[in-house]
Length: 377
Figure 1: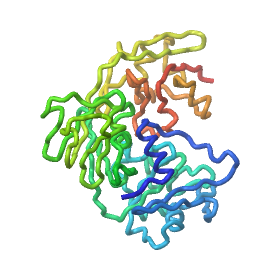
Figure 2: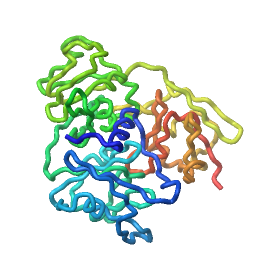
Figure 3: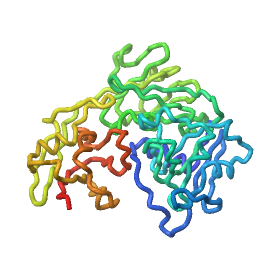
Figure 4: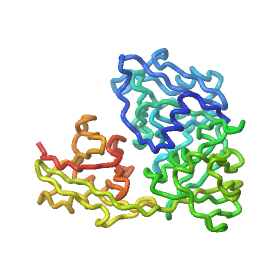
């Protein structure tokens, strides 16, 4: 098993907090970035500024195979597979349209690139890779031998199931064993952007479940920060401070089951110029999106009834922290046509979008407080 390096520790912590993909604006001093490359139990940090660049679309970029070669010159690309992680914890496999691409065949690394200033990841256009593989601020390339079959853990939310390969998850030393944190595994699965809104049960390969078979209450999200799964055996273990019954130490764990915790719906303000209306998200119709009940963004705008023709305007979104994609990232306002493929969680107020839109991560605003209706110039 891999031992955690500083980068891996940061990724695991961010996964546990449910971090989302953000935009990397590069080194503050104009210097180059480093990317960590792991293989087996070892990891090497490679300074992108030390590697030869190639011209791709008018940019000087570093080929991924060159990065891997600098770290592990003895590895043949045909003999390995790769996964990727951003500095904010984002992993491509957490998105449904990238899950089937990961792990990526090693030969494809010849057609991928990292910007030496920002470490942003890009690919040859003809590959047609979705936006979730175009990572902002690549921090880590994780390699394994081709054909390696790691233990899979299913994360089940309603009728939607996400699957995660534990062999690609960072481990930490717990009582002398290298284990995967449960909160990090659930977050990395991408089953939900709001893990704190659910309670948790676990299922062994034999079908045993503590909630169904012992009548216990599902565990709160906070408890998963003190629980671990063995990446080979699938056995669960818990911090003794939780004082959980032994039945929660499930053996040969095959699945995690999420059940919603009843919480009051949130409100969001829709604003056009000086006019604004507060909309109660709990009163709006929801749609099921990969197991979660979400409200379409167009429904929120229509409920506010601020403008007669919503299609004549652009849209921006403001988090409770003040972040706005148009003001803080220079993005163009969102088109009305795309609002039918954008959603807000009625409790967490987190935004999500259909993957086919290929939107940058900054549009997945967390804890959205305001929807801005903008006049088209």
